[in-house]
Length: 214
Image 1 (cartoon, rainbow, N blue to C red):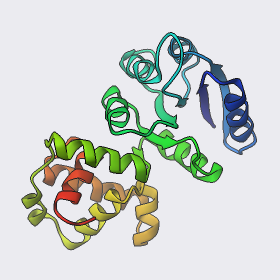
Image 2: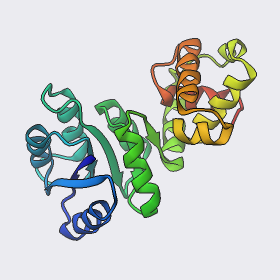
Image 3: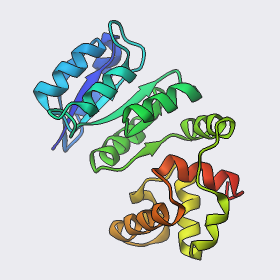
Image 4: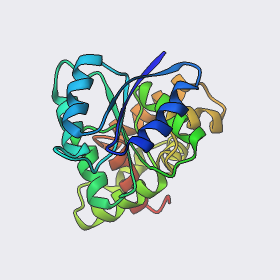
């Protein structure tokens, strides 16, 4: 059972998310927060698997709340999936640096949101296409991605996996598209990270863009 904490300052939005999550097999809503500080407290007390986090909330915004949840030993096991209407480059980077595992717009389709919750709960990172573009735009003006020439060390299959990562695919989606097991897909991703000297999937996206794979 995936335990979900909802954090949004709009009661109607929380209600809609609560109805969606609680009516889905394998998921349950364990709490709701209307402010960032409430989200931090509830994450520490309830230990959810996933926190659906809004950015703009009173008292403490969702990005600072994310940072505190991830940094706190008591709630560090909780994964944060940020949902927002403000998918700007600075918001995306701030959220990722704070420790968010995913970033989606609030108009994401219900089935895609549920898949995102499962993906993040499984320990994978997830970026929407809009968030990916925002990261690329920001990073190209402040480059610190792995050098594109490191692509030469990748096998043909690893280059294909990198292209899929850069397109926003999760490990599970990569496995489905390439007709391999999820474990094999995860192994490919780990090897690519090591060969490219990248800290995370975000840096792989930037490297793929600079190398012309997108």
